[in-house]
Image 1 (cartoon, rainbow, N blue to C red):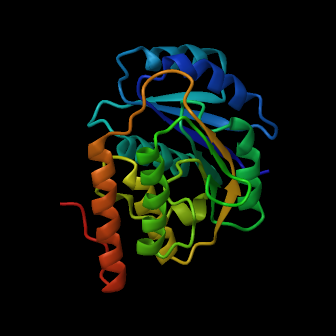
Image 2 (tube, rainbow, N blue to C red):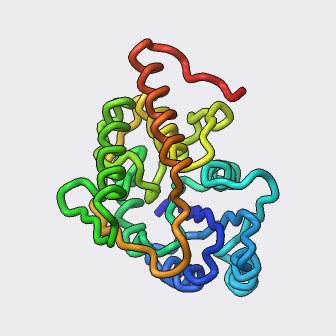
Image 3 (tube, one colour):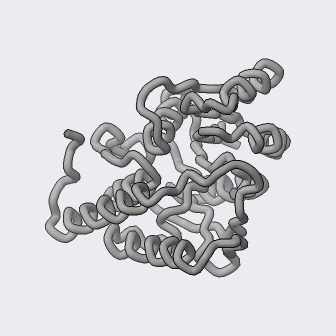
Length: 245
């Protein structure tokens, strides 16, 4: 099996981290774990350090720059490439993503995909959440809109539960991406689609977080709408992606 690094961006996830670490480290085939902590005031970074002290397959990257899902994900994925991992996975720290699905994602890439997405919106996937109708509609329609704008073909364009083939990920122009939040996922997907990457989806059952607070905000939703629209315009007009200002 190829070497696998699971990148987990964290901010105030101390109540979930221990359980997540135990389940990831128990996987077979084994994976390495990299927590990328955004200086969490609740002590998530300190807890991650204590876990890492006893487990060589568990590491921590403490960030001091501007916070945000996109920045943390970029640093974690770059670390996976720099350290020579053949596969790089990403997942949320809140246990909404089932760690037992990671081997299915990695197997899909080993079988030939460049990106395997843990998908809520393919046959066999489910949203087992106590969301109101507005948030549920935003999630479903947002993914459909991203699919149309990026031309990626995936049904769940906004899922952060993914496994990348590192040789394909290396071609993604992270330095040109301008997202702060979860629209980073759409930017990466669009870049891979432009490069002709093979994308597959693995059905997952997505559940509500067990503890802590959601990081989704109105600002993040509007950023995703803006970024997705820009990507669609660039694709339709055959324009190169706009560089970071």
